[in-house]
Amino acid sequence: MSVLGIELGSTRIKAVLIDEARRVRQTGVHEWENKYENGHWTYALEDVWAGIKDAAQQIEAEQASAIGISAMMHGYLVFDKKGELLTPFRTWRDTTAQEASGRLTQLFGFNIPRRWSVAHLYQAILDGEAHVRDIGYITTLAGYVHWKLTGERVLGLGDASGMFPIADGGYNRRFVGQFRELTGIDWRQIAPRPLPAGVCAGTYKGVPLCPPEGDAGTGLMATGTLAPRTGNVSAGTSVFATVVLEKPLARVYPEIDVVVTPLGDCAAMVHANECTAKIDPWLNLFGEAFDLMGAAYSRGELFTRLYEAALGDTKLSAFMRQLLESAVSELSAGLRILTEREGVKIDSLAGHGGFFKSGRAGQAIMSEMLGLPIHLVAQSAEGGAYGAGLLAAKIGGIAP
Image 1 (cartoon, one colour):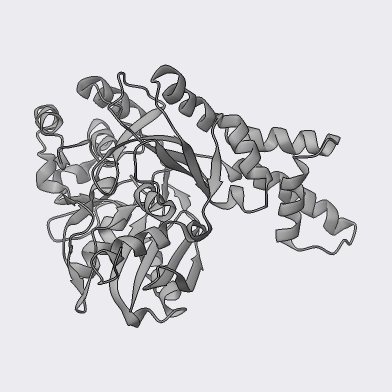
Image 2 (cartoon, helix red, strand yellow; image 1 turned 120 degrees about the horizontal axis):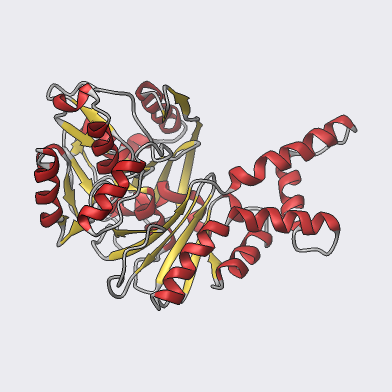
């Protein structure tokens, strides 16, 4: 018996098949990239399905007893009442909703970042975009894929909490009322229904699916960090840390999102749009220099050796250390707000993503910058796809 986990990340769509022992049996990967078009970061929806098909065809996906879908959180996917896309997908990377973010944060007394779905919607209203009057459904990328596979307009609690604030297992009623008074739109009428982990959220060709989740929630699942005082750091193209809280924060901070886990527990998320994106151009430049000299090397060896050089005591070491530190500086500032101003206790963080793949350097420098122990979890290398598979295991007959 096996389950299938699929994740649509920023640069890769991955499918993993997980066996009864929760080990990854097979992996399929499809590379893709977002595009900047007409002032917005986007992916074409036909590329979504081409990528899923390619990744799934690399494994024996038809053997799965359950399926879990994960994808990058937030963003803006809106459809009319007939299910037709109204405007191209706007991703989490889109930062055009600054005015809406500020106004909603002030109205709710709750931080609403620019990448959240409700901020995108309100910004479209402020900008007078004609498509708003025709909106029948708004969802995330994971919610969209799940909807098209099952016909169900639902979303896991964690992913839903990156669209609109969650309280008591559903959208915050007070904020829903305030948003309706502000815009005339009843959020609950156009948004997916939030569901907790462990319930069946529909079927595809007779195979049950768990509620679709965002990459923060499936990252917590993949690293086994769902308990208070634990959390994880996903460090790749972007970097974010999600910490499960023991109690609510005392204040509102623009640097910190307040979300929930797939189980509904309160969590704090610190996010920065760039991480390895700050490092890779420099490493590629080194590669060009080696190419000019006719040196033989692999890309993996180049990245590993330059990352690990950061732990040495040469001039190159100093440069690489500064480069790696700059990639996590925003994350460090946000987490220190949690630990120093709010007194949040964090026993350790689990790290996963490209920043940690070189060897010791990523782990050591991240730990030093955050002032927290970082541990790496072997199976978390498969990221959100593995976490989505674990969520699917809850309904697929695989014992916890």
